[in-house]
Image (cartoon, rainbow, N blue to C red; front, side):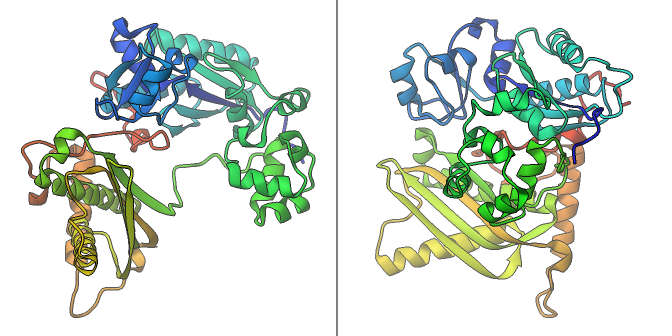
Length: 429
């Protein structure tokens, strides 16, 4: 059963967002291939490439030395997360002029639900064009976005990917087949190589075939109810667009290590602590404790080492996480008679927590009651969230220079939907 014809969603996808933000505030970078990196060195990973850089073959995730081979004139720029957050907030304020149902999907994407607004906005394409103009006029003249229009959010996102940069595409019942026939399964949001292989084994090779496959066959091919969701999405039904709550399977904090950082063992130990505290903050915010920790190390020569630590009791405290990780490393070093795992050859370091349990379900021992410490931790992060991360810090966080740089993942908006009116000079509505 198809949704009512007045259902309408716009998906706004900012083009090469981090790089374009840098070009917006620094006109000298405009028209040049730009690669945004957390650290500036020849082995730094490019987290975002400008439109000009992409045209020359530069991709996100490339090392700078690899990018220089395909684009010798690429300009490396250090990341400025606060700039991206500020611009994101301004863009969201523009979108909220047109609908009170705007959902940020990531730092550079948002869905606008225009269902019920058809008497106000009779032509969604004209509205999309106006949004593009408003972003340029009210946020930044160098910023561009691709907008997709469709009767559900999934197809609107798919439409936004059809033409980049600065595209505008509509998917409706009379146009969807023509668009799907030119796509691969992995072009659909949410279908990775593994799922595509599963579908191909079931005889479903293209998005067009996927659309016309029965829900029963899709459910069997996907081995879950997700098959039914694909059928609904491709036939103009909305499954869900609410992403304000997350069902996290894991949380990870990982950083590349600069030459300067690896010179001192003390700095590497501080970085490991910072990663554990980063995960502590995320777990506090989500109201969960973890029952498993993983440590990942990669070295300059390409060698990788990792280990998992199942926990007998759920944990949330960053210092406790750090102690367990250190104990695991020390035990491994002693058993195998190896050099220290944390050493001056380290190129990347990561910590992951998983197997979560809600904080409301954590059982405290009568003889080892951590409830007061857990309540205090929640209070501390409440103060950080309200007044800023630097207003209150633990003694363990004290350092002359912060070793963990602030970064933004493309799948994370760092609670910006709670801070849309915190720009200086912006009055809260």
